[in-house]
Amino acid sequence: MNGVYTATKKNGETYYRSSITYKRKHISLGSYQNELLAHLAYRAAAGILSEDSDITIEDYKDTSVLDFEKWVILINFRDNHMYLGNPIYVRPKYFLYYLSPEHILKFDTDDLFYYSSHKIMCRGNHYFVADYGMQVNIASRYGIKNYAVPGKDFEFLNGDPCDFRRENLLIKNTYHGVRTIQEKGSYKYAVRVHINGYFKVGVYNDITHAAIAYNKAVDVLHQNGLKKNYSINYVDSVSPREYAEIYSTLKISKKIMEYKP
Image (cartoon, rainbow, N blue to C red; front, top):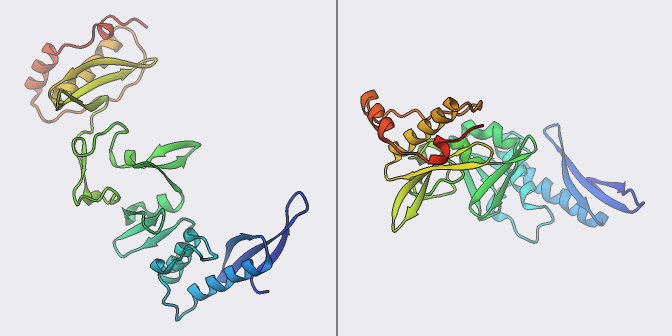
């Protein structure tokens, strides 16, 4: 049958692989238990890729012999003449990443190369990619901290939490060591610094004070002899004089003040 190839597992069991060639690109369609299913996968792919095809992503059914990811990949290849290994459909000014028919992420075209080579995984409302053997939260790519609070530290301007286009993201807290907490019905800013674990610096009512408190904690640790590189918060919301006044009067944890390496 067209598009079907017999293969053998290590235990000697026979299975069937399906593939198709389109625009000189050899595309694997998957492995199947019997020859008929493999051939049906080939026919489904051929139908999608035909010149007069009007099959869309929305036409996908759970009963399709092709998996949804391959369905998206083939339609994008047909329409946009680029083969991408992940379920991406490219639009003129952005692209869609399909986690499922109903769960769709939106990104700027500038991110296309990255996500075409990094598969997105989902855990709750968090999205991850595997990068150098580690799971990396994609929110960090846009300046959103892992502990950031939606609506307080960042905001999706159009209300869509799946739209990661930069024009849709408003980052309100970019400071190192500062996280937003809710205390007695109001928001405050907790500061911590990592030494050989996280040490509490303090809790502050104002985000600028919190950012400066982190800087002060780092300065104190260095003065006490700790040889560790820290990223310092750049605070441009106050003048140098105001910064100095806040810095000199801010109280930080006694454990930080007295820490000895």
